[in-house]
Image (cartoon, rainbow, N blue to C red):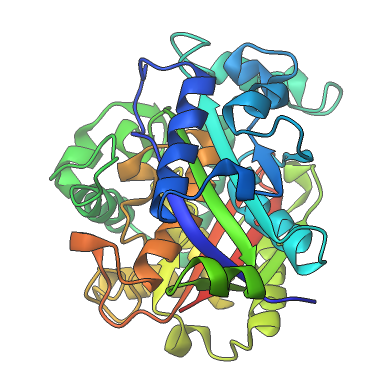
Length: 384
């Protein structure tokens, strides 16, 4: 297997009702990515890997085809991967296989979402994903099944809502320094607790916003990276894991699917002591508690993330900087693009180009995303 590098990244603004079509968003993200590589021509890209969440979100039956012209894939191989919310990081995993195998020397990875099409909200579309026999008769939606998980997590670790609300405060503040963020801001714990209750214990400010946006990365083999850049970021560990789709049959306290994926990715990257070796953490945070829940899985210690949060260790200047980008809660959540944004953040952090968001002397970072019905874990480990 060949070593694989990230040599460029670009993204659009993340916005609600972004006044761009899906092809326009893709084209802009790709342009910014290629410009980041010194104005590299699309002719030097061997293939394209595209990802986006369920087709209904964009109002298309086959929205994978949207990326063909917009990403410059005419006359090139193009692949689409899809695992719901885990798609963005899964694209990084799949992209690694494409390049490490020798099939491609350069590969453009593109993720996008246009969630404003199903106005006013995509929640109705989510109701079609549940098992029609065992789950759909209950009338579930995503917020209330996550409320069940959040309650279980709080009870298992005896957590107060005030502590979990600190995640929203931290991430929205971090997002003030992200040039493409949707909801950066200075809020307080009381702001979170006093926002509208959606399904207890979930308040409105516990939830990331629906967004439109696109992200692009350029991956290259070691030989190609040496020709094209002086500052590669190596994609050294990748893994995915799938749990049972029946969330009603699992203990929701601990995300084993994240733990198992992380262990494989760490082993591949030579990470033996995550809390000591990893400098930047970008776990998937569509809800406040999910950042903590997923960080537990990444570290491999149930209940450790809330303790680190209470100690201030998850702050950008703490010992375990978590979501220095601002995460989904602050930057926005165009579902598939949100995961790839976290991989792009590792590229910017580890290449020392994150600006005001920069974690000093960052050498190793991990990004994780999660999707479908609380069952998909996708993890990548990057190294300077």
